[in-house]
Length: 180
Image (tube, rainbow, N blue to C red; front, side):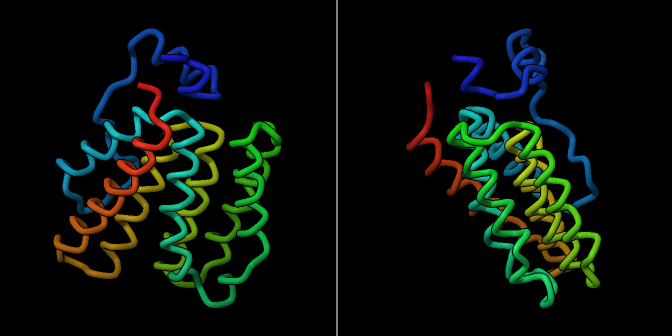
């Protein structure tokens, strides 16, 4: 495995190089989830090069823009953050620029007035942050599950369906970008 393709972040390259990446990771947020499917997703994401992981996270987050608060759905910060992440995948934007855009994207959650809007904005902000560190990819996916938990409280079926969608998308990106 080419460590530079695995991660653009030196800390993450060191972890994988020293065989210190622990899967499955523990979710950083409280969600009602299907742990088996989360583990499967995380294993798929771990095998994607950093560029592909960013593209996967962005495409996955696109599905949650519709849940943004109405006054934020057309906010130019969404478009700007997407552009910077795409530039990062093409090596036309650096980590500093991406991180700054990620901080701006985080403002969308702070400006949300509904819980679903706030968590949906976090799905997006974490997807943007994936351009800095890989670990934000699974966190973005977990926030997506939190949105599903809010939309369908106590119903595990939509959670399973969302994880399967995430896995399907990860498989598509794996076929296209895998370096194995």
